[in-house]
Amino acid sequence: MKIWLDGGLKDIESARVSVLDHGLTVGDGIFETVKAVAGRPFALTRHLDRLTRSARGLGLPDPDLDEVRRACAAVLAADPVPLGRLRITYTGGHGPLGSDRGEHGPTLVVALGETARRPDSTAVITVPWTRNERGALAGLKTTSYAENVVALARAREQGASEALFANTVGQLCEGTGSNVFVVLDGEIHTPPVASGCLAGITRALAVEWSGARESDLPLDVLDRADEVFLTSTLRDVQAVHRVDGRELPGAPGPVTAKAMRVFEERSGDDLDP
Ligand code: PLP
Image (cartoon, rainbow, N blue to C red; front, top):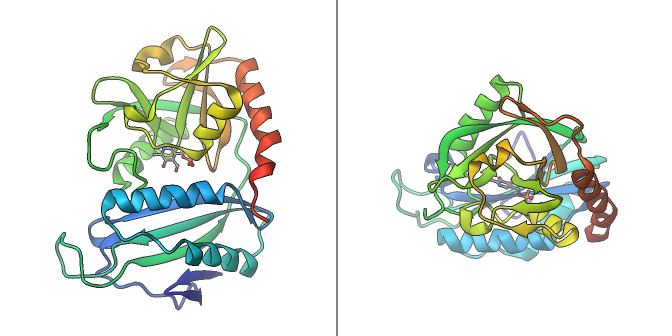
């Protein structure tokens, strides 16, 4: 398998990043996961816009988007897979031990992995830890994912594929790697970006295409929602059939099923040639 590093394609075995790269030592990095269907990236421009926003949020230099596009095209051409995920990682680069930025430029890595189509529905749990909607990293797609790793491990222990967080004021926020939607009296609601969630690209498309409303929602809305669904690059729109101990029989319900259908029909329009 080939990956992009230091301006060119490399064999994965020979690609080397410094052990003092700050992406490794202090999590000073950002990333994007981009779906690729038959070698064509989905919604790449939106992902690159968010990559730039995340870089600015961390005070990293703007990524060279021409290079990122070339890198994506090159790794996709090198390893054709029917359904894949491009992983774009961009870090502060290597420098001295400690949290100050090093004098070396940023590191850009683009890799490709194969993915499987996700099941139509899944179980989720809620976790007692909170997203900090006022933190410096709120809304940025950084590589500081350890809290998500811990929450996801707890979800797996309970037979679920996702863990949902509230924010510091008890509002429903997001999952470890997905945004969350609830259906109440036939209307679709999702937490606003001000709740501290990532401005998910699938979320934005689902809001646009399914007419969802952005609403502040208490966490316990999950006890009474008629339907719940998740969105993310790797899940698209995915129904939830269990939240903690609460079963949601028949998931996907009618509203979620429609959102899934609309997403599937329209998402083909945003594939890069
Ligand atoms: N929230 C978090 C914390 C994420 O990591 C992700 C994606 O990885 C999402 C939401 C969903 O975003 P997107 O639809 O852009 O994949």
